[in-house]
Length: 267
Image (cartoon, rainbow, N blue to C red; front, side, top):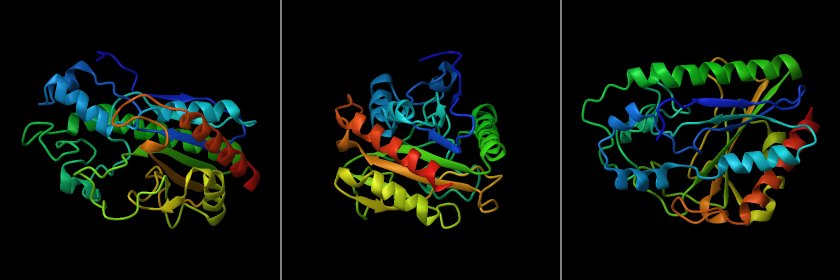
């Protein structure tokens, strides 16, 4: 645990790159005061972090960035999603509120209590969610200004077996799930991703997780902002839950780099 964490990092890429690799769920870090608001004991919390963290996805993005001729920008969350989940809607639009996993989680992956009944998460939204959203919006605006377009590629992972919190667990669980948006995921971007990840045993669309991350300023309004979510099934590259990475990590980083290069060629 850490008392004064940096909430996020924007790692610079090439001045003219339109790509932002977004890594929102890779960290396990919790500020001490946030930890005190969680009802799990230390052992249960570590187990929950094993399940909820997209372990090693920051390393996947780092490998990709190191291989690209035109380095993408990287926006990496430095805190656990148990602090806030920056990819949730901050209001009633968020369907995960049904299982206590809106912007501030009150339930665990197994639908058990994470925070006390009636917990008010507004302070965490103010301290962490809103600055994160503002910084991500600024990062996308900067890519629009520099390159005339922005491409947000989310790097996530998901468990091989469904967890109780999942709302759409009945569908396929391919090695690589590609999350799309009808406005912000153009056909060329999707095709480039399908080709880049063709060597991992198959890709699927929007199952078990769907959608993309686009800052609310641009969401549904600015088609210059493209977005795609990459959900990697964890057995492809790591020991579950929460274990060490294997050789699949380097291969995935190479695939992400191939996608970034292809995006650059789309113009």
